[in-house]
Amino acid sequence: TIVVKVGTSSILRGDSCRLALSTLAALVETLTTLRQAGNRVVLVSSGAVGVGCQRMGIKKRPTSLAELQAMAAIGQPHLMRYYDELFSA
Image 1 (cartoon, rainbow, N blue to C red):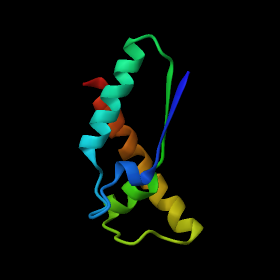
Image 2 (image 1 turned 90 degrees about the vertical axis):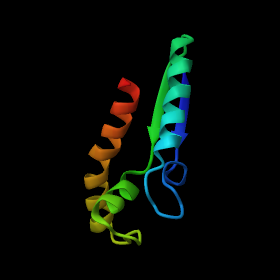
Image 3 (image 1 turned 180 degrees about the horizontal axis):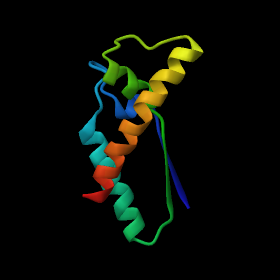
Image 4 (image 1 turned 45 degrees about the vertical axis):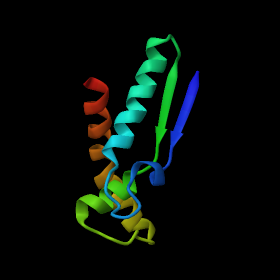
């Protein structure tokens, strides 16, 4: 089994905190190739808080636990949708 951990800084553009779709697409392509070669692959992805902040137009990462949880709750389904669309393409 190959475990791939992707951090927030890898999937968000540092300059704008926008989702780096080209990076996600390249990652998905690589993981798909590994699966097609017969490997078991697990993707562990951070970034839900960052995507939540992006969706809400928040420029600075929250510091309180409640705000972090709220941003993660907002960002997680959007992040999963991006992955789902890319893996389904």
